[in-house]
Amino acid sequence: MQPADALSNIDLLVVGGGVAGLSAAVRAAAAEPGLRTAVVAKAAADYSATWWAQGGVAAVLAEGEVERPSFTDSVESHLTDTLKAGAGLCDGEAVQVLVGEGPQRVRELASHGANFDRGPSGRWLLAREGGHSVARVVHSGGAATGAEVERTLVAAAVALGVTLVENWFAVDLIVRAGRCAGVTFLAPDGTTVDVEARHVLLGTGGAGQLYPVTTNPLQSTGDGIAMALRAGAAVGDVEFVQFHPTALHAGSPDGPRVLLSEALRGEGAILRDEAGERFVDEMAPRDIVAASVAERIRSSARGHVWLDVSGVPGFSSRFPSLAERVRQAGVDPDREWLPVAPAAHYMCGGVMADLDGATTLPGLWVAGETACSGVHGANRLASNSLLEGMVFAARAVEAILAGKSSPDPTGVLRALNSPAPNDCGAIGVERLHRNVEAPPGHVGPQSSKAPRERPSGTVSDDRRRLQKAMADGVGVLRDAGSLSDAAGVVDVIRHRYGCGPRDDPSGVASLETRNLAEVASAVIAGARARTESRGGHRRSDFPSTLDAMSCRFVQ
Ligand code: SIN
Image (cartoon, rainbow, N blue to C red; front, side, top):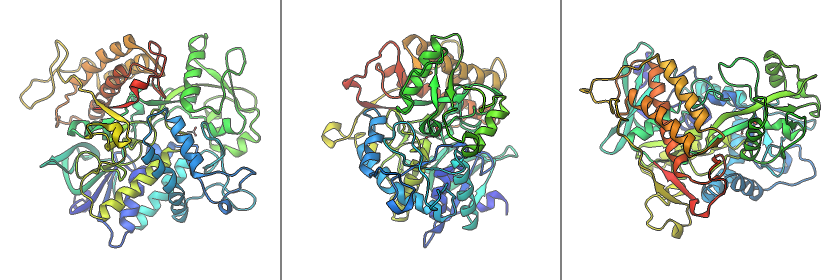
């Protein structure tokens, strides 16, 4: 069957083949009666950002399920740790849902065949990661959890007869009468295909490719967030780009940086500066460790600090995939400290959604890294990401099955239309209006009649320019001047590639660059408006956290 034939009369069209999209598809197809479901991915279905995820899945499991040391854990403790990491911007109701429903989603994944690491008694082993008060992270292959999750979900989707279409690029959402009615794709043969569906779920991951140094794969170009922005769906919290503090600073500069999982620090790895001194609590939340590493690097002659794994018992046998990748990069973990530096890792914000993943555009649903469900706030707690995809994808499907067709004022959407957000117990919102005018001397948003300025270099030149501007201006540390410089570069590229609702596609690379510029512009707008430091957003000109800024910027 040709993909186009399989893509007719679809109830649920899922864009993206990672944990969020596949969890939704598997649940939808397994329901009785099921939903006619298709998953369309821009690459091979098993090659998503999920595949690269390391640490694991944080969830409070029952006493008899895990190798539990003497401590006891609780859902309340997971909730408290998540809220603390989120630096005042989590939605409490959404976090309750995450930690409350998470354990059941982990069990379901195991019932689909996911092999989480087990201890001598056959129960699941738990790891501890930064920001967690106790060990509560189930994992697979030491630090190869994402690959196991991806393998399991692809196999389950195939077994349930879900249509999987690979290498189709989602160009834009189809919006009709105020509803999302499908997606326009660019097929591998260069034709554009409109796929109609009763419901569309975006699980397209994040936008790590905004930066030259990232742990994300090449596909992470913010496609879902950019499509939602162009379609007018509310997007929030995007200034909170999370940088992982310990990416290996060695090996090939192309492709994702080798991530050295926080689980290593949970097992005793130590961060050391140029002088070999410890300088931070390795188990602090990720934003604090990343900022501290960035500051050490700034005041040193090297572009990195060190991760000393000599105190991790049996490093190579317990973390075989990591040990192999470190060796491939030319570093011997048995003899040397590992050079590490921060790398763009995760988009905490995204397309705003209620507690069922429904966005402000009826018919459009979202889960996983593409979403702003409110569970991450200003900084995501380690190993809450796979969990978020599993929990909110399941809720979206249950809501669709129950007949829901438009968003409710719950979660981060509660405050959107409320005249007095504080009265509804939600964090207030402020609308940001991005400049859509072309900068002087450049052609503005595309219309079919407007002549189009030719880019001065190749698409890859433009992408590199954008990435450099983001790294220089919107990195771990930022200020008004650096943000303004980045905005200058990004605005030019954004207008070059056209920001109208339907550009004329000239190939995947330019469409991705268009999306990166769209998302970069939103990140910069949020970062300029947020004149404080909070979570993953650190301004050297505004180092304090301000009560007056306990709000969500929405675009
Ligand atoms: C890690 O293993 O350090 C990354 C896990 C995560 O991003 O939550």
